[in-house]
Length: 370
Image (cartoon, rainbow, N blue to C red; front, side, top):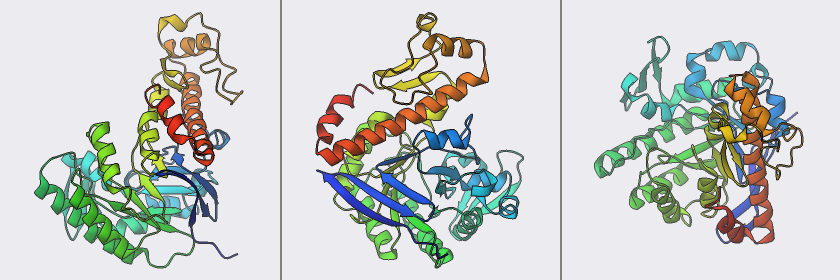
């Protein structure tokens, strides 16, 4: 069987918001799409079959963490990441570039060698070059591979951001060369440039000349305000390639997603729904709920009467409150699944309203509520 290259088509538009379809040999992805995060080959506290039942069509895993544990050779030996974690969904892998920033105390960056890490687990030295990042992602069997980039923390230091962006372009070129010809896989470039409009344009120009299957917006969700993030998206929304998926990395809250879709974004990932679920915070159509609060001790209603997943609505706030206040693992599982399910219902509603031409009204109704 010939494995098909990823394709993307915009099917509907409502101003700048877009509704489209990504086709991969593992399955289709309706956009705008949210990717649950399975950093270490697992979406924490959940079975992959349950993730599929929430309507999730793609998940994300992380190159850096899988490189450290269990190691790519161990995953290759069983036939790749999909077999390792029993996942039939498409998988996107982050290149490890974000960890260059988030674990900056444990690494240094060398233009030619890449990121030189000391493992946060045992201190062992690793060198993650663009070529090594691509080799690992191909070994994992990732369906969407990300170029190696440097993701600096928020700063107004123009020279620093310009230098970092130039490095990311150089690494993108090397990543593209290392990726080669892979009929069944896609390679996404990552737009950098911080909060500076001219640097974002420069990055987009360089990446489109290299040519990628999709374009991510990096260097956000690193400490900027929501307004600053939206300003960047407003700056580039008419400048990004219109025929390729646009992926906003590491974002975010429901209101972040609504605002980003309004500005033309197609793909999202964030640990927020899973991390919040493990700590007792639920996302609902009427806002956020801290299920540990004593006021839910005698509340026998489900978390969200508007949730269409009846298997999740079987459990009352009363029961969930009990699970969290007795540290029962089931509470984390149920609330994590609820949150992922809510995010997928939100994405479905977004797509429906874009198709109907009513997204701006939907956005305005929920932007502050959620």
